[in-house]
Length: 77
Image 1 (cartoon, rainbow, N blue to C red):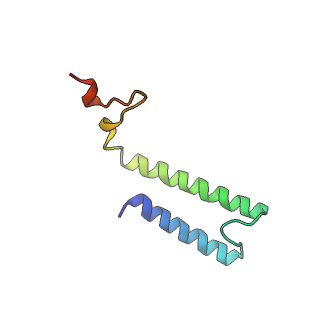
Image 2: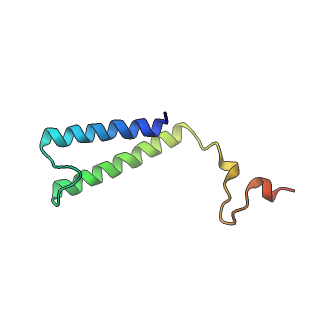
Image 3: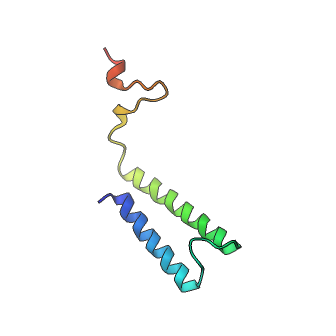
């Protein structure tokens, strides 16, 4: 399984447990606590994405077309 998927799954379970423990309806009620919950989930996802991206650099960068759409192999003669 993908590490990003596992981190997301664990994070989702922790948020679900926290919502249940503190009596916060999920996914987000129209209140300040709901807005904070959405903000916390977004920040958690972004942080997990950055941490995992630093550990494992992209392996398909040579296949990226960039702004023109031409890959490295198409640019090189």
